[in-house]
Image 1 (cartoon, rainbow, N blue to C red):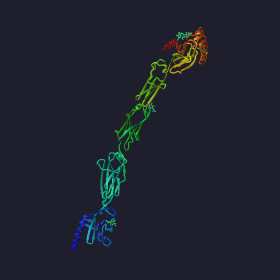
Image 2 (tube, rainbow, N blue to C red):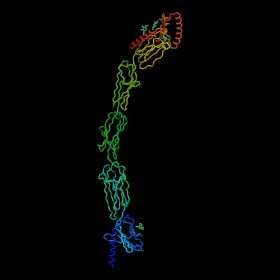
Image 3 (cartoon, rainbow, N blue to C red):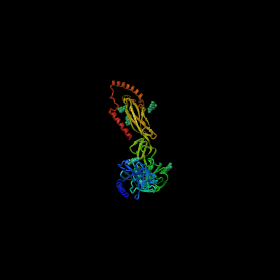
Image 4 (spheres, rainbow, N blue to C red):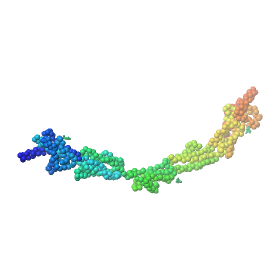
Length: 569
Ligand SMILES: *[C@@H]1O[C@H](CO)[C@@H](O)[C@H](O)[C@H]1NC(C)=O
Ligand SMILES: *[C@@H]1O[C@H](CO)[C@@H](O)[C@H](O)[C@H]1NC(C)=O
Ligand SMILES: *[C@@H]1O[C@H](CO)[C@@H](O)[C@H](O)[C@H]1NC(C)=O
Ligand SMILES: *[C@@H]1O[C@H](CO)[C@@H](O)[C@H](O)[C@H]1NC(C)=O
Ligand SMILES: *[C@@H]1O[C@H](CO)[C@@H](O)[C@H](O)[C@H]1NC(C)=O
């Protein structure tokens, strides 16, 4: 009977084992929490179950009892080991295991006895734990560009299974490439808890773009939890790669100015001291990046350099050009020349570049540089030359006074429009301003302004007889006189009174325009009366028109003109 039952149990066990192999289920629990291990009774109804028993696999083929529940009875804990206080059973036969640990990762089996059936449901238990903490330690103080440096260690503490660590830069994963990125991970298992601590060391070769980059590490755990460490930012250091020498000076840079040389270099930290190479002289400047040259001269022009104190090959250079413009105009000041003399003009220009020269005379632009092989009165004036080289400009001037005895250029006559008077015009040249005088009294019409050594003097006369009038011009250097024949406005009258021709010329003149006109009116009246009288006597001759229509008069005028021109030459 015992044997039979034993073989029967054995057969049942074999049947159960077959089920067990085919239906092995895995339940995952969280470390430290209560784990429910279900007893998959399938279609069985709770009231059909006579007994439920939980046991576990102790290893080496041994099993340990945990608890038993008989129908209509309370659960009885049969465990005597560490499970004694941690197990209980739910109404649906699930085993509740509190404070799950890694050592609970084994097979738990639920054995159910129903009317004529005994079934075993083995369940495989797995315990997971996410890392308690994830942080970057052992951080590098700074990252030097291009140098593989240990950036830090990311530690994921106490996890099961062991955490996989991913390094990220600006939230993008970093992948070891054997050059600029190297990642070494290691796992340590706590002998007591069995939990794994993963450490990942990142060695990183930074670039300039890593300034302000955020480095983090993260784990994506089997529990589904994602952990991200607090981000870390590094100071990126690099040695100087670029250097520029700046020249700070006003434009144009001229003699007497100051010039500041400024050495601008990159690098982090940036260099603070420099060597300045000043045309052969070396000046070391500490805690500053500038050097000022004061009161530059044309000798300052040249090449300047700056270099790093600890690396002379790192240098920058710049040319400095001091602009200058010196001019020397000879003559200068006040120059007095006699008309006809020669004046030699020299303009010396000493400049840092090509120059442009312009000339003005009395503020009026001249087309070209003046030449004075024979100075004339019209050459008098203030001459100024302006020289420019780039933005630089200089001016120099002299004032030329041409002086000499006056010369009459022209002595002419014109008949007044109303025929009652004549205008005599004396044009003279000379300097200083000549005084003009006439051999007869007349009304001075006007005297032109004295310009370019020229003066024009006009008088109005009312000649009552043929006259020879002379104009005299004079100044401290001499005098000139010229005469002109003026025919009478009152020829007929004069013909009558020809016996009185030895009268003084002056007495034949009537003075002044107003007086002249008044007298002229009277005289014309008288002339008319005489005419009337003469025409009665029949002795009237064809009257000449003094406006030049008469052939004789014309010829005379031409002769006068010729003579006056001869006099000019
Ligand atoms: C068993 O009962 C517990 C509550 O006591 C419940 O949380 C669990 O989901 C049930 N399990 C099954 C497999 O029905
Ligand atoms: C500037 O230098 C010139 C000579 O190059 C000198 O004559 C002058 O006195 C200097 N001026 C000042 C202000 O130092
Ligand atoms: C001009 O007239 C004034 C009187 O009005 C006389 O004194 C003078 O002598 C006259 N001059 C000549 C040159 O005849
Ligand atoms: C005056 O001059 C005119 C020519 O201009 C001449 O015909 C005339 O005879 C002259 N009269 C006297 C009195 O000389
Ligand atoms: C003026 O006339 C006289 C003759 O009456 C003559 O001899 C003289 O040359 C003339 N003078 C001029 C300037 O024409």
